[in-house]
Image (tube, rainbow, N blue to C red):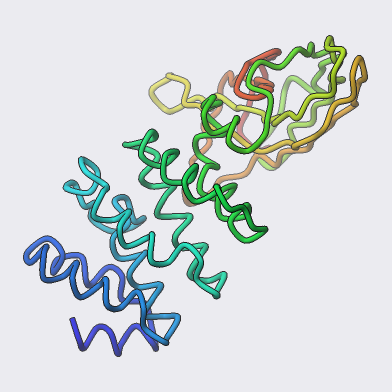
Length: 261
């Protein structure tokens, strides 16, 4: 562990401390608590990254997926870290926690925001991005968004319904308010990609956050490039696009994807 503390100042070591956490949980967490106060920002970031329950490309820490309290005690020491590099890691760790324990994540952020700062507001938005895409009412409310949007989608249309690999999925719409008060809204679009098995797998993408005036309207449009990515393989067939506002699906349309010609 002490060797990894020195190594992390030069290259990433968060994957390598995880076996120590699993084999010697109490001793490791005590050491990490001390490291959270270290003068070196890379050592401090090692704390929040190393205990992430779902660190990408690494084995999960199932004990923290069941009970995130030991992790939250470490994050408490880092929540006001002067380095954005560290605070971003804290937010990513909270985003991990939100996938298994959304209530614990929200309770933590609610407590941290009793004395709001711009830095904490940024950390909160980044930590809740997963729950916001799910339309979680608690996350939306904490960020100041309306959880029951009074809006309708008008003039929703696709530029083309038949697309080839490498083309843009283009769509436009008008968001119309039915409220006599302004509304803070999160507008996302969801693509249900067809898998090789034929089933549809949803993925949510950010469209915009906006303030919609009372009885007002807002035109929106988007171009989404349909290309193969290392994290998502595209398959020919029928796919579906949906528009969701603060987690509520308000419109949708099918499109067909064919092999690139």
